[in-house]
Amino acid sequence: MTDAASRLAVLCETLLGAPLPVRIRAWDGSEAGPATGPVLVVRHRRALRRVLWKPGELGLARAWVAGEITVEGDLFELLDRVAVLFWERTPLPRPPADEPLTAPAGVGPGGLAGLLRDPARRAAVRELLAMSRPWTPPAPPGEEVPRRSGPRHTRQADRQAISHHYDVGNDFYERVLGPSMVYSCAYWSPGGSLEDAQRDKLDLVSRKLALKPGDRLLDVGCGWGSMALHAAREYGARVTGITLSREQAVYARKRVAEEGLADLVDIRVQDYRDVKDGPYDAISSIGMAEHVGADRYREYARTLHALLRPGGRLLNHQIARPPEPDEAAYRIDEFIDAYVFPDGALSPLGTTVGELERAGFEVRDVEALREHYGLTLRAWVARLEEHWDEAVRLTSPGRARVWLLYMAASALGFEHNRLGVNQVLAVRPAPPGELGLPLRLRTWGA
Image (tube, rainbow, N blue to C red; front, top):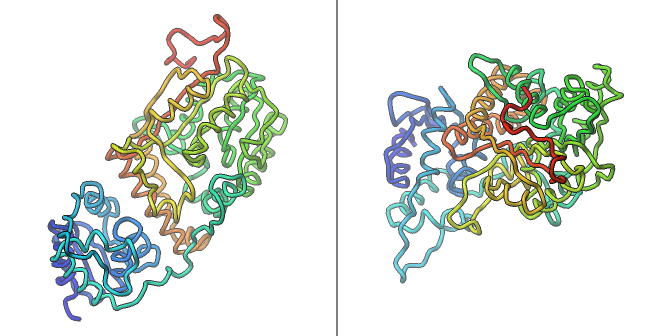
């Protein structure tokens, strides 16, 4: 086929019902679409089959992971232009009652059903299938997706899910996260660096928890130990950090030893449901609750409530999504679930606050940090691109491409208010006069 890009542009505009938002370069070297801006390079016609097989984010993601599509120019701008197609699409027309809804032979169930409702789109799909050759797309070479069996969010399932995401290699995460080794939203000030912003976030958490020398802090999902080290070094707290990642634990223990804080910090490989040595004066949970699962969230909240002394504080730092008109229809993002955070789930802020209150907590403060996460993710993307060759060597080309795509797309999600992140300060109630909270809470003891 000659001039594949022009034909692709016409067919894509038929399917989208809108002008092509980005320029396309096809496998034959031809180009079509807007003259300026980033270019979506379709390096192999197999990418078409992946997108048709699974329209939406997952099909594009599999083609991206396989290296069959790539981007020339600003990745953020391209994703911004393409994302609008998924975020603001209108429902496709229903077929007439007497017209059966069937997919062409060899097309996976559920992949093309929506596209086949309209005759013009149906014809475009058939031509794209012919262009992409009639085969079921194989898995991308070296594809790294978790193998699931049994129910989700058992202790074993959670260990496997955490291992898939975090046991990628500490050296890889050093390249992406930088010296702070903090894998959650930073707290930015104008002109500050990523390191400054992560330090300020850890200090904000510490001040909200009103940490002081001798306090017992449980850091749930302690990662590479950054919060535990900060709380012990700067506030004299006695910290227990727990993680399900053995690689993280090894790294965190090494940092603790190097800083001479072994008498204040204990790092464990342990499920939060198995912690039995309460009560604690404070609990920090930073970027961990997203892994708990909606069905287990009440258990999570009740467990942390039971581990706190009366008057003890919980700082729950968690990503949120907007509420759906019909919450029962909510579906987990397939790309994120398959490639990035297996078994993860996001809830609206109101749901999180409600579950904490039902567990017995008194919610005292909520601070939204949405814009801060967009800045954080852009900083991580810049570091990954800067260290790209090393990142590929330390993991694999497919894994590095997954991290680049998910972080860039997530940055846009926060910037467009499709994702949020909030710090919720909650207290286990104590008798009157014993809570010790300041009348002007937002001073945080500063």
